[in-house]
Image 1 (spheres, protein in one colour):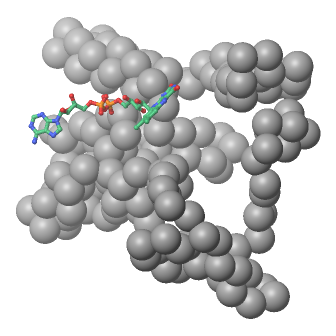
Image 2 (cartoon, helix red, strand yellow; image 1 turned 135 degrees about the vertical axis):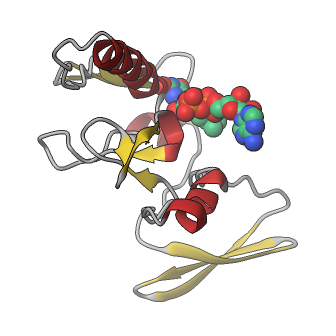
Length: 159
Ligand SMILES: Cc1cc2nc3c(=O)[nH]c(=O)nc-3n(C[C@H](O)[C@H](O)[C@H](O)COP(=O)(O)OP(=O)(O)OC[C@H]3O[C@@H](n4cnc5c(N)ncnc54)[C@H](O)[C@@H]3O)c2cc1C
């Protein structure tokens, strides 16, 4: 926050945007509405999963989470349909041992793809099936040309 404030960014941490209209953004906070005058508004509050998730719900009766991601089993299949596997941003996988779903990022998507490939190969070859263990190496956010924060295997660094 300090680095970004030095760049002239102001934070409003408690509140949710409920209205965007030409020239104005309105944020509801515990203390009441805050109006921000703005000529340009850039929305960065996340993305929704593809509408394919909802189509699967209609066709197969599976469940989706709040973000529209399909809730999957240990092997990334959907409930009662072992022949359908979901990887990447469209899947909601909570069997991580820490009760937090896998994040919608590139590293989990790639590892899940590799796991599903190995699992299907094991089924076809009638070998013991592997189990999925996510290896999270960490993440980094670049703030500006001179600052970044990172979580590297649990080691938190900021500069
Ligand atoms: C702005 C932004 C920044 C991001 N930055 C990072 C980052 O810094 N680090 C990180 O790890 N992750 C980042 N992510 C997340 C990362 O991109 C995703 O988690 C990852 O790409 C998920 O892979 P995926 O294969 O599930 O989906 P995608 O990579 O989105 O691939 C899905 C593909 O399916 C295609 N498709 C969609 N519908 C259909 C259809 N009906 N028929 C045929 N094809 C279709 C799409 O065109 C696309 O090519 C970012 C995402 C966004 C939006």
